[in-house]
Image (cartoon, rainbow over all chains, first blue to last red):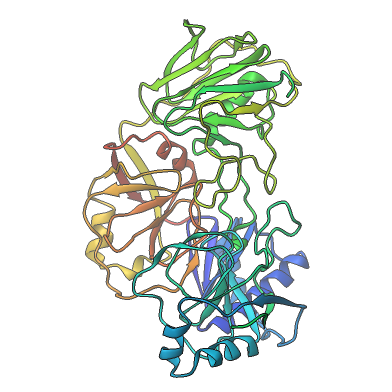
Length: 203
Length: 290
């Protein structure tokens, strides 16, 4: 674990793997809830957790070295189920990358349990880990990806909360509302949430 | 619609509703947003008797014109500009009474970029996640104003400030930004880090509320390849593949995959809001606070 200063009021804590980042994130949330950590923002990402809005980052950096960070329990929290029609335009390409049929891509995706590692790109866009195999981004990003597109890139799967440009491989569509600022909570997926994709309709 | 409202007659190049933003949601991918020149927004609010969190209008380069439906107190600050009420010149940087139905015109910035208009009662559009700010990156909050937009105003609660003149910082002729190196300065060559803190840059025309883009020496990476996405702070100086530093402003993305060479001191950020394209920029490395 390495604590990198980011200005005078933030620490970027870097760990070795995505699993360690998720475990550290859970531990930081626990310590904040217990009143042991005063921080404005806790922002997990691929291999880091950013702590923004700290009074004394260097003092915290020293304390961090002695922390025991337990691994994330595999079955912590409720599962959010997202219904998916596996009808995406890039199913063929993903099937070719994995050397399986399109139906098998859908089966693998629906059989896995995912966890929201972090959010970014757009409000409510979660980067979900748990994919059994990786897949490269599209060579040329699309200028418009429809809202509700279920997609893959690298080790992640995710759902576009609204129409936007995007370079991920589109394998399906959901009617789930990922982001609604009038809803509480606005985001269907937040870091740490467990997720399953449930196939609906004909592929 | 009550008469506590403001009709937009001329929206200008880009006029948005801004308050203190919506910090605290970065983990959901929600930018903080908020007025870029926060001290200017706070000052005009104070001049009209508003609370600091009241929403104001932020203009870009060529001002805007509005018509209140009832008599209001207003104040314009930030970038200096000509102001007229029904064609008659009026004071900049001071409380001003505008009769209902009169046309308040905020002229082009004489210097700087963004003028701020506070109206007694504040702009009372529906908040999103606790803020009325327009976020141009993620589209949260009200859309940028268009001609004909009608904005509701909140109830006027306090008397306006009884002052004639207040000090406003002048827009910068040169932007001097104190930076602390890191978190990813080690992704750049020593020569690049040296160039970053010694060579002058200029403000690029591509700058916006998301980032202050610069032109100048391209910074050469010591570490090739991609950085896994990581959290970004306000004032982060991110270096995209073209090597030109970008200072992240209020609407910045919450995570990013390009290395951050340094972070700008928060006290130096409001001046970036008023740095017009072509303004010289110097990044000055300061020691990290112990």
